Length: 633
Image 1 (spheres, one colour):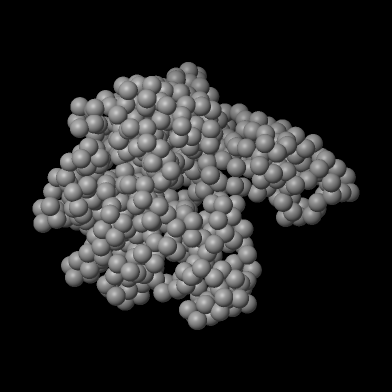
Image 2 (tube, rainbow, N blue to C red; image 1 turned 90 degrees about the vertical axis):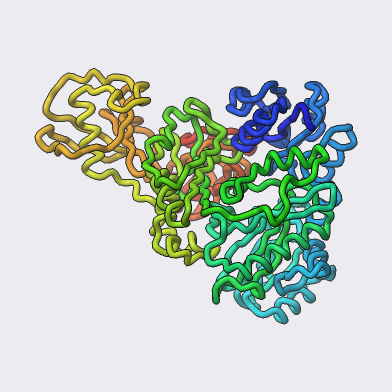
């Protein structure tokens, strides 16, 4: 058995792996960058090794540094988590060549599933159903155009080396194909260094169904049933559940058997996921579910599978990597109840889901205050605590919120309630967005497709204007000088010490109100948090921040042509120069943070003045980057 495990990752997955390792008596080693020096996964490990600067390309993605850290600490195994180097066959081989145990599949298995075209051909030979399309070697525009016409529009262009939604384009009509192909190839080349593509028939009512598989070095492969991951935004999963709603036993047996065949075709060891796309226009049917790709690692959404099977997949990974057989046979695995996971991110849905970074001055997920059903439970996986900082360098996940119950309805209701109780400040989160999605009638009725969020986005985006009750609670705190000790665990707020009086002028953003004590109602029970001269009112997963003064009055605003950084990040492109004439909508510069690019454009025709940044520079949120001044001024 492994005795000391180095986790080549960070955040919640590193903490998750450490929890199981500790329970098994396995010592743990964390690695960390400059930005993560005080991170929770570092504090949780038995040992920690610094591996470089904050950018992942200089730390978490440098395999030689990670292997050196394992040697330095005497670790005998490396677990890659997910993301970063988890599906890098060369890194897996380097770990093995260094005499260490690789907690993952063999490098040859990773390579076999690494390119989408080769994987589809391999699956077709193994009798696994694949989406109708073209994955041939002739990559000429003429051949691809001809094949798209033969498939029938709409078609999907996909980069063979793609992932995370990059290098994908839906094409609805023949006249749009060549332009979409060129765009897809450019993105694929920039992202993966490979501009080859394949074509697939566009599924009109798509659901994303995936099967958890597990193999060992003794030739055993089992499945742990399926998950539905249809709720996605820009091809990134948002809410996942197991088992898939509407899945009958015959279809489950067929798709899970196909997944086992897929894993056996590449001699698979460890945890993996076979991803399928289902045409759900007539419900889930075995003859309308097609192989998409295999993820040769542990998935973000693995907790829902653990909740319905009672299996600790990380424990299985460590045992199988140590040479043991899979602990259970297929006939021993059963589905118990239903589990749903929501990904809680530091992002602002009301501002186009821009990342929201900074210190978590207040973080309370309030799971202990949730009135659970008797046969339900809540599980939270996180890599941060109150006082930690959400960095612009990595994925902005705060936590994974998981609910399990005897029925899907119970799991939905408990998870939705948890999102409504969430209190995070001053970092914004998608908690109210998640709650709105979980409580949407179509989600509750399992009317799911991968376009669910896109189709319902207006209804899902939370309204950010405070209600009268929020203004009243803030005014009550200011007028009475109440400190924040009304609830257990909320005593860290600072007393305002305001003198008792009858009226107060409050500001929320640019809006102000004069509030009179006589207008107070007695039924106000909105939660609150106080610090200095700021009051944050929590309600339904949102917060509303009030002050007694105009914060930053006289500062720049977009209305006067100021181009303001919407998030902290790196300037990756500056397209204009000082004094240059620009037109409304013209791109001025591009910021990058948390794997996301954000283009800043001219609000109207004018001239660039006060250009304060250059490519490669770092900027803070709300920094004035330049101004566009009307040409007549």
